[in-house]
Length: 507
Ligand SMILES: Cc1ncc(COP(=O)(O)O)c(C=O)c1O
Image 1 (cartoon, rainbow, N blue to C red):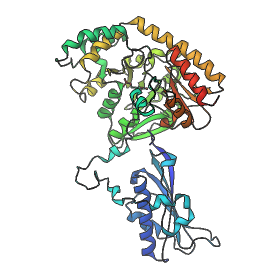
Image 2: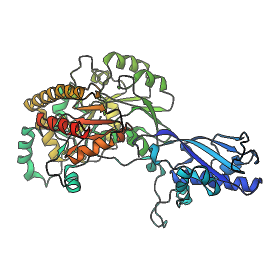
Image 3: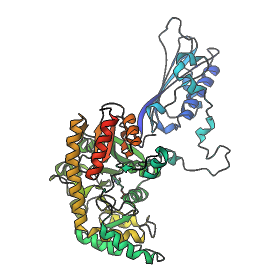
Image 4: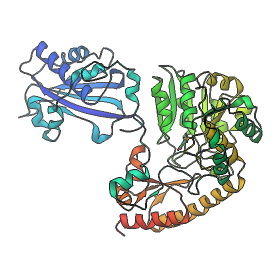
């Protein structure tokens, strides 16, 4: 499963007994339903279907079969094939174009009955028992469980980086390093740890639902009003709250790919539509294309800056030009999870647009440079009237008490932040050099991770790294099967990663 939808085609074929309207309609209906059921396709996912029939069949009838399968509004094209000597007689072929989260190899092409001989390699997929009733999205095999919202079927459950303990169990490797989730390799701020230890005795008390202390400290630091801050159980939750606040079915959410998966999650959760563009040639968000893609249905625009997984960033001038083109009624969200690692001088000051009262929200987190990913604190900075709307969908105690205390202490730990940045910049320079020595192409990064291309399927290398106790992130979860993403670690971790990579590449 991909974390974002892409356009793909499903092939299918079926034969009929006779050139009769009822036989052709029935066979086409069955073929269409099987293709949809086997690939979990809903009518609204289908862009169009092309049906071709051999010249011994009437091309007028497949359309009726597709309509009978429930595709009342789907564009269809039905036509006769050029006669081919010795071809299978009375055959209906289909090409269904659709949007799907399934990977290329997960698609099931359906060749039924005699038509199985056309594609013996795919025939088994059609022979497998497919529950046509699954089209109705029943909640359980026996239909006893409650029905559920169809929109959630678009959500691919989040695939986190492999936990260390899991790898230890699976491979029996004891000395594991995790460079998969862009955590701080130096660990949490020592000041945060000390504050947390002291706070443990107060766990029986509910947290401060307003995050008062943390709110005041952050507002001062960023020169915004306290009312402009939205806190979440990680910035993940702020993204979800933005969806809950602003999205309705029919709304479009615009972003580029590959990118962070939570934007698609928020859209799907609310039954909104993802409009996904490619990144620009420099692997950052393509703001020019995005400006052109905005239409009356566009409600939310996410800009991951710097982008995860590529590490590339959009520049100040591009952001200024983009925002000048964004119409009223569209909310632009800058996800700046890696903000504290950025050193590029032309990185945009997106908070300026929030202060100007534009429809802009900026997202930041304590999970990265502050080393508190396990505590879960993220925040958004928005114009006051928008923040007030988002507060309506917030759980009363969504940021736990320890998280607030840890984040406040970490915020004041300038020494830890400086050390973390330094470790990152020296690690980055060293990894650039080593990846270049291995002849591997990497994308210059403004974050604490590097995305690099092996030039061939990266799965084997990913597995070989795991066997050596090194967990990185496979590019395939981002739809980039030849790439890997590695978090910049301590010097020792970086060295071990490169040595293991060298071995994995057979050097
Ligand atoms: C771009 C981006 N946004 C948001 C997040 C989520 O951060 P948090 O831990 O605050 O939920 C991540 C985490 O990796 C990320 O890469």
